[in-house]
Image (cartoon, rainbow, N blue to C red; front, side, top):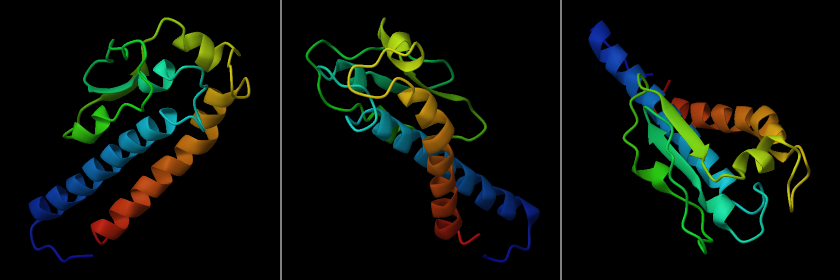
Length: 135
C-alpha cells in the first residue's frame, strides 16, 4: 500500500477505492441481470429494463422490441457517499423476480442471484479495488 504522511491523503485514496468498488458492483450486477443466462427471457424487454440511478430509483423501462442489456451503469460517476438503485420498472417485473413466475429460469432465480451471486459480485469488486489501489 502506498505510504501517506497526511490522513487526508489516505482518506482520499480509500474513498477512491470504495467508489471503484461500488461502481464495479453496480455495473456487474446490471450486466448479469441483463444477460439471458441470469434473467428470464422471452422477448428481451425484461432484461433490457434494468436501470441504474443515483439518488432515487429509475422508473424507466426499455421500449418494446428492445433485446439488449442496458449499460447505463457504465456512465455513472459513483460517489460512495450517495445512494444508488438498480431497478426494473416493467409492470410484470415483480412477478418475474419474486412471485415465482419465470419463463426460462427456475422460480427462485432472483432470490438465488441476490443471496448467492451478489455476495460474489461484491467480493470480486472489492478484490479488484484492493489490487488497483494497492490495499
